[in-house]
Structures are given as structure tokens and as C-alpha cells.
Image 1 (cartoon, helix red, strand yellow):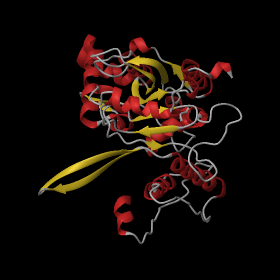
Image 2 (cartoon, helix red, strand yellow):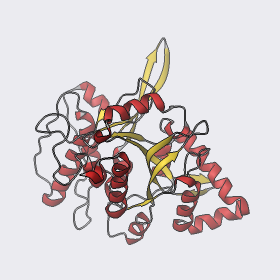
Image 3 (cartoon, rainbow, N blue to C red):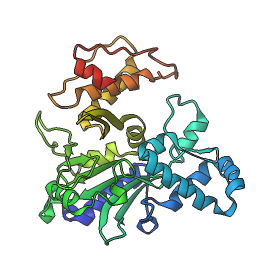
Length: 350
């Protein structure tokens, strides 16, 4: 047990697992650009390796300035549209389109798209100094093709701290105004992790920050069950953050919810980044897996407690089933109909 008793060993165990079995490479914290809040060199490496013809076309416009011009365009698009939209839909400069991420195609017989998907660069970087104001560092930063999508603060009970300390650190010692924490513009989710529990938030807001549990549940209760093979929270890096799982979450689950609010006679838009809770992720994937194996005609009962996000689970299920293909890569459902007797749920599903 002595090899897992300190925080550095905990950090190293996560990195080793992600790099050896999760499809990641370890990033270099020296290449993280504090001004941009992303790894410029890794972004450019990905673009050149996957979109050579687009690069050459844009080079005719920008010449030797192509790297700086393209970086400036990316920075602007992240500021205007946000990380999620940029990862899913790419950017355009002088009419030339670039993808910033390739998601796994539903039709797995498309070898060209699968090859591009496999060229995604997932990195896990330790002790990332992100601020121009101080030398504060994040325990871990997860990036896709150089763009930060998640941060992690780790605590180990054997050092006298736990997940509560990690949450406190985010709320009191991490300035939400720092670019890497800027809502929707950089990291999409922030994990507070110890060896027993995981919590997450999609928006840092000082002491008002709201963390949600991201645990498996234990005997119909909170927390996580004992893991005979290691940490109770190992499912986070061994399953959830594994390459295929993580890219599916980024591409098909995370949702920027926009609500029109009227207050004092004025209308404004309230935005909230929705990240699936573990039970939501699990139920959608279990249903999709079963439908792929058995086809249409099955009945399923999803058991969620009050306030556990039933409407989002329904929406994610409908969304995934609408584009699902069978083993012969034929689409399974022509359409998906959701029937509900609740007006609130109907509005949420829209």
C-alpha cells in the first residue's frame, strides 16, 4: 500500500493508466501557452498532420505567417463560440475549413474517417501553470489536440485531505477569471477527485460553485463500492476518460443549454453546460449496447430518483438511438418519438 499513499503517486497512477491503456500521451507542461490557454504547438501539429491540403491552401493567403494567423483565428473562435462548438464544428479562415477534432463515425466501415479519428491527440499533463498573475498549477489537465477540455484537482486521504479539500481549492484558490477556467471558452469540466469519490462542475463561480457527484453509487446509497484492484475512483480514468468514451462524451453528451429568461421586462439568455452524471452515462450506454445486440422491439425501464436528471437521460437516449447503426452498419431506427405527459419535461426535451 505504501506506493499509493501520497498525492504524487496518485497523480502518477492516473497518468500511467491513461497513457498505457487509455489512448493518451503525457503532455509537456512547458508548452502550455498561458496567454492562449492552450498548447499552440500541439494544435498546429494536429492540423498539419490531418489536413495537409487545407493547410497548403491557407498558406497561399498567409505565407510564413500561417501559424500565427491560424492561431489568432482559433483564439477568436473560442472566444466567440466556445470550446464545445469549435471541437464539434471546427473553424474557417479565408474560406478554408479546419477540424479541431475527429469523432468516431457511426459507420465503422468508413476507413478514412476511422484513420482520422485515430489521429486525435489526447494528452494528460501534470502540474500545469496556467496563470499570468501567479505560479499556481493544476494537478492534471486533459487536452484534445492541444485544447484543454478538463482540469483535475487530486487529493489523497492518506495525506490528510480528501475531495472536500479539492472542491475548496477550486472555489477559493482558483480564479474563475483565468482564461483556462472561463465558462465554455476553455475547459468544459473540472473534476475534484480523491481515492474514494469524484465531484464535478462545469462552471467555476468562487464560493457559489456548484459541484455534482460523479460516483457509481454504493448499495443503493452514495459514494463508491470497494475496488479490490485499486482506488475506488479508478472507474474515472479506467473507463470514463478512456479515449473512445471521452471523445463520445465530448461529441455526443455534453450539452450547452440555453434558456430565455425574462426579468424586469428585459429578456436575456442563461447558459448552462450540462455534463452527464455517471448514472446517466451508464444507462444510455447500456440501452444503446442492448439495442445494438438485440435490435428493435425491446422494453426498458430506467430507474432514476427525483432530481437525478431524467429528462436529460431521455434526451440522450433519443439522440443516440436516432443515429444508431447495427453490426452491418444499417441504421436501426428511422425516427424516434418521445411521449410525455409533463409539460415541463416536454419543454426541457425541446
